[in-house]
Amino acid sequence: MEIMHKATESAYDEDNGKGKDVSSMEENDPWNPSYRCAPRPCKDLTDNVKLMKEVLQEKHVLFAVSRATQTIVPDRTPQSMNDAFVNKLPRLVPILEKDSVRLFLNLFKHDSVGLAWGFVMTPPTFNQMIVQNALRCAKVALEGKAPELNGHRANPNYMNSRGYFPLHQAAEMFSADMIKLLFHYGASANLRTSGPEVIEGLLPLHVAVENACRHKFLEENLLPDKENTDYVYRLIQLVCLPEMKIFLDTVRLIAERTDDLVVEVWKYIKDGKLAETAVLLLAAQKKIRMGSCLKPDGYSKADGFAILSNLCTEDAVAIDLEITQNRVGKKQQLKAEKNLKHMALMLVIAISEAGEALDSYIRAHPEMAPLQQLFPSTHYSAIS
Image (cartoon, rainbow, N blue to C red; front, side, top):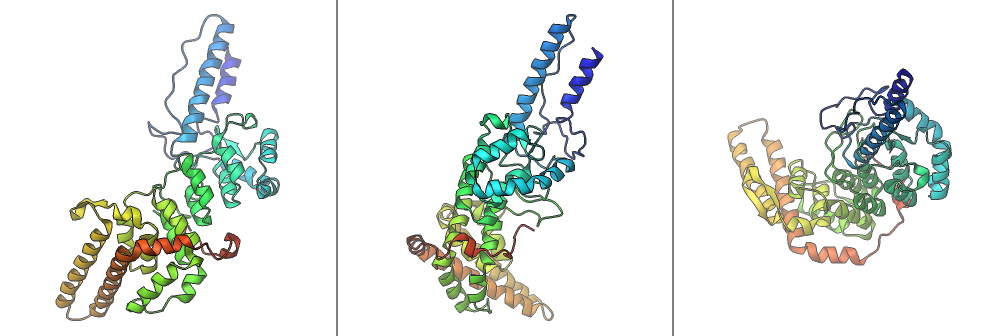
């Protein structure tokens, strides 16, 4: 009986967080869901072993489903497994380069150490598939039905050790097909980055928008003076060109699944980020026209463009009042802020009135360059 107890305890080690400092072990932790406790031991040893196996199998199935389908924060993978994954990269990278399901399943079947742990594929494994845009392998990983996987599958809402989710990585890569695949298997567009290695609080939408605005084409062709109306005209013109289509398509795709879009646009306006505002307004205009909910300001389900216009106007009036009350010091700064609000208002009105026609033009023209040409190896990352 003592030997059986030790064997059972060993089988549970992978579930209970041994070897890993788990920081969130609350009652409803999806990594450790509640399960039926083992009944009292039977007198008959054979029946006892059979019952224990049934309970253990039931628990394993419960854990596997919960860990593959619920949002997992933070990463629970032990460092030893991450180290094993790094050692496996020389074998994994060529397989994903070919996007060979057969080779990946063969590797997993014969040596899954570092590729899976705790009944799910490790976040680095799935992240590598996204980085290499291995769509076929990613699909098999998300399905988890191949016999070689032994019940393991990838979780599209499992934060990795660096503090971001699979959808953030796909947004970084501007891979529309990978984003669609992730959404099909339940990825959430409303999960934010967290941790010391990332910019805190970023949605996948932010990653797509901000990386788009740091693309060399846009940076090199925008006018330097953001407080000039010509800046707004040039900005709209550039964003509508074929060179930006792949970025707008990606932003549009993610925006369709993102909550409170008007709130996100308003944050960009408040921060004086006109390029980001233009990209998001133009790409997500259809959803923005459906409205949003800004309860603290009294708006509810109105046209998002009308909400933003009102907010810009109210903010400009508030800045005017502050200017009159400031005899010295901040006047120049306040005037610059007011000018930016006027430019933002101009942008909102222009896209509100002409956005549908501009969108038709954009959709009618293919992008100018393939993805690998748009992204040199030194491209800027909005995640970290």
